[in-house]
Image 1 (cartoon, rainbow, N blue to C red):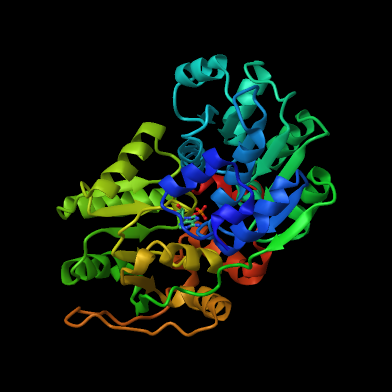
Image 2 (cartoon, rainbow, N blue to C red):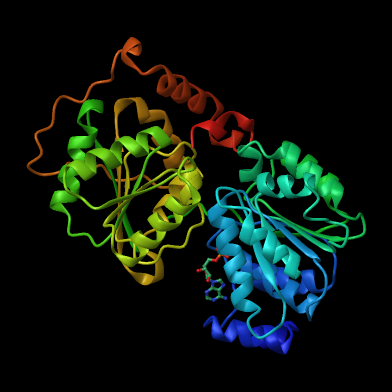
Length: 412
Ligand code: AMP
């Protein structure tokens, strides 16, 4: 079924055409008609499925022309808020509808000016939105459509109280669209608080790794991880490499050492200022930086085309993050390579990942690398944070996804 058959407005269809989309993705096929009816929706779908257009296109069609602030979209991270706002703006280019992105880390000035000019759609992170609500720069009394995107991530980041507060400030008589990769009980409770009689759309958690990605595990002794990373970079013919670290501190450390080894490196994590994050992403996209070191939260959902290699310096915390990370490469038919450095302490996490994706990841050795014996470090040597974490993640397993509460916030 082409987009034309979906009852989108002509102006929005022109926006879709300008974006170069020809056929709707499965979530778009199912969500667009549901959103157009004005009813509530709960969808389990992840980034990469075309979820943004699945809500943006029918919302823009429903709005029609410029009026009051009627739509609020909540996103967990600044990057996603910026990306989703850009998508709205692009699709709305043949309308007179106005959008604004509201997130922390940048000055209040421009955001306030845009708000005063009058906007139809606000795409915001919960923290900065709460600031504006408290100082009464924004009122939610005219919101007729509320989108809660990546709810599981918002809860993971400790935004539950803010999200609840924001929902309660919106008029009861509204349309609510709710997106979450998984819906464990904690999230189901928010859904029942936010939604009325919703249509359910399930696109399923992306468990499979794109067939165009060659992925492999590289077992290594803990204190040779950086050496192996360098050796992989030296031996690999890459264009752009995304290196994942579990922690912000770790990302900084890897970046420092790579810089010292003469690589051009960008860093992306939640402690960087907004300007630094924008510069890092833009520089990585343009080729100014050959390597970007990132944490999961910062990199989630970000669309960077043309990443030739992903290197998991640290094994991801949750199996679905493995799929996300690996999904950064091998996009758009380019064949990508994804390497994961593993130490004996990661055995449990690797088992979880392999079970989750339903396949065994091949183990490789880098030829010519001077490997030390790979043995588990004694418990007392484990850094207390990493040790506590490894234990927690094995006990909880990936099914506890979403149950981490605010604890994780500080680490990313
Ligand atoms: P999302 O899941 O919204 O982050 O979208 C993932 C990527 O798919 C983005 O780069 C979108 O521009 C792209 N995309 C979304 N819908 C379509 C479509 N119908 N046809 C082609 N590309 C799409």
